[in-house]
Image 1 (cartoon, rainbow, N blue to C red):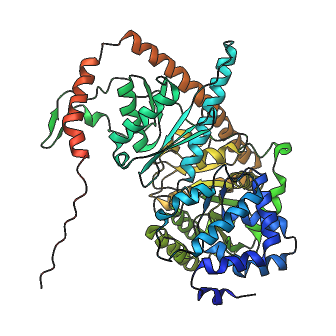
Image 2 (cartoon, rainbow, N blue to C red):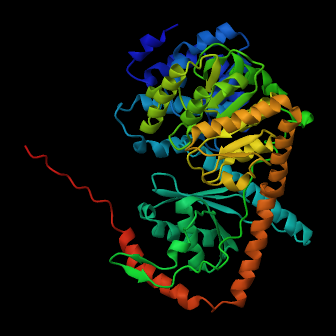
Image 3 (cartoon, one colour):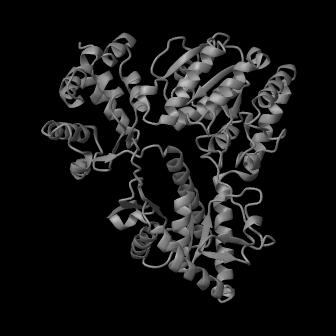
Length: 569
């Protein structure tokens, strides 16, 4: 079997593909069949590796296979999304053969865009990129809204289905993908005009009206661009808008009167005494993230893999470092490996605090281990920093660094497994807009420490349902974590008390059912108010529209200007 070093001298991955498939045809066919049986549409390396582990029982045979051509290809290719045309293993196999033959005939410098449409016809789609959390959040939101709408319609004795459309523009901005969840329709609009939010809103609005055969009753905006488009759409159609909540001290007070230089001066802006928000907080999927005490629901089939993930002393592509004392509780943190998420911060806090190191181990799930595998400069810098910190504080035997994990079912059982060890979850971000991992950990009954900068400050009641920490004061934060573990060691009920407090907080405010109920109630009320007070703010709205058309849109149409300065000799 060819070695990896030999493979690196190969002209391209295309050259190695036929030989790799020939060497592992039987195993890959079984692997793909199991993959599709589980309804997965996005082929991810960790999932493929899990399936391969089940298909190939012999560990030596599996290692030998992954050290050859197939392993090299898996480590040097990108994520692939397959569409609904590839419904069986045989169809997938056929499409792979056709795609491989087509790629072999192309020059190596051929851009992806030139054969993208042909790939779509064969069932292959471009991956989602680094948007996993956003995709999970929006899909969970859709499911919750649909369930609540179906329940309300049934309670009123009607036999109709709700229509929910999800409008999304990919990163390159060149087309708009609209998913019609009630009937699973998928429509793609190719439009260079959609690069601009205003044009995107016009194109999307026209398609929504065509699909729904009328106006929607409620629009929900998610994230910055989504909120802007949703606001424009709601204003044009005259319907109720629900947007992502965002606030910071003094934000609204500073806009009671303000000036935009060379544009206009606002003398009567936001009235700080008006009610600003009716907050409906999202949650986590409770069919996946449930308390560790619910033994009958536990996903025990993941336990061998989780134990290997946490405690194996062998470094590989999925984990490095090891835990010498397995009986110690675990400090657990999981996030992207960037400066804001501050994974290197929690590592340094732990390294500096001897009391904390004596009480527990540290496990972090984040990014890659090898800077050369990352394409992001910030992540590369954080990877190097992590290695330096591990060496500086001599953390070997006390830290486990696990590569980014994407299987939410295994992740949920990982939270619960750590809760079994009386551990805790730490979210040390410099700023966190919401904090989905905080909600997930609390749902699993894992006591949680989270940043006091952003959304977690509202989720957690300090000392009751969890703990808030200051990311700018690592010494104080690490001492707070150490105090918790010391108290839990002296009094087992203290850990149980915080765990129960976190669950109570979740059930009180942070479930998708509560979210959907609040959003629909408020949407109904505000829609009714619109009919009663139709003319009340119409003059002000027209004035704002005038400013938007005459000033804002003109500014938004300006493209970036590149200035090149010649260096003087």
